[in-house]
Image: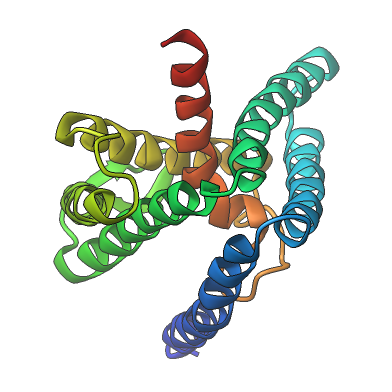
Length: 222
């Protein structure tokens, strides 16, 4: 019986790797194809995101007006972020910015996950997400900044400065924590089950949505 948790962890890791091997190239290909294919797929994902957010809001122990407030704020957040993404998915060279954003987020998440598992150490926010550590946070900042800043010269030159990339990596990690808070309130491990090893779309896109939301606000108020 004692070996079962380790077996489950290994099985979950295998699912994560297989999902990534399949979904990452597929996602990049669909984005590169552009409209209408990218918009159709993105529209389906957005529907899943709204359903998963509604599930988290309705499942938690908040009273009715708090649940409705949660639904409203989450809906505004998702609308702003996804409209910004749709804007660039519809433009001829928008795939470059989407690629760059995905590379930044994926490298941040991967470095944080690997750094946390290898180095471990003090917990970052044990009451919110017991698995996250300061070592993982620092590794995520370093990995995300290195990849994000390096890839910017290839995909989006003269758009993002180094401090801007650092800020976006920080926001990406904040988006991950934000979704962890929502799941903690709802007492669930994952927002969904559609992506094997990863949970739902909200679990996989939390950092991406946070950065998209921040860039949308920057575009509006800059």
